[in-house]
Length: 334
Image (tube, rainbow, N blue to C red; front, side, top):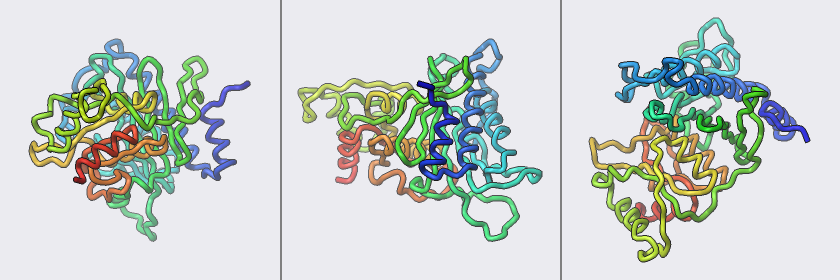
């Protein structure tokens, strides 16, 4: 039986779910860009791509060389196709305007070009996260696209996905009808469907959190993690293992593969509402997790219901297996 490539899958979606052709082309272009990023990541020191750029992004984080390279790859791949009205990236202060020499399309693309880039130099899995939104009707406005066009709740995402660059390069994708996993066949040069209907188990015995921040957590998180660590002798009556890769893509991929809970809670430092970005990380990952049967909240409400107020807004994140996400969310709501 012939293998189903990403292109074939998207064409079949066009037939069975009336997926617009321009959305299909957009996803294929993003996938090609991810293949190019995967190639750059795989070179490592041989390609001279490791280390810092000596610059900072809008969040004040030091940019790695591959952060900038990945950002440029995604911009250049997507600006000319005519399917986008604009783009936004974690690495750029403002929305990216489609050059005037190219036609404008109906969609908006937002992305974290290289999630977990602090892990690049130590050869740990990193990835690209992306989300597609419909561009609001601008009613004849021909000026620059402002950030307000992007400020849509995650429930309005048309599709979302991520590529993970590890022992294999994989593309995880949802278009609102489940989650599919594609593995890059380097000999064929195509992403091939290898995981047809990914589901997150409702129960789990694994959690991921940065324990070094424990002293800064709010009380509901301290209580919950204390119960996890108490194991079979504690109120949850079972032992838990902790896993923490420090790259959201890698931690979420593990949850999609075998279940688990990922937490990046609010803490009391600098009055920050959270560390992860709503538009580039939390929304697309929440969409994927929900489509796989999991749950994603900020501790109080569903992430996909949050109304964004700025392009680089940060939020707390609790996502993964339904049973445990609902438990820690209930502790917050109490």
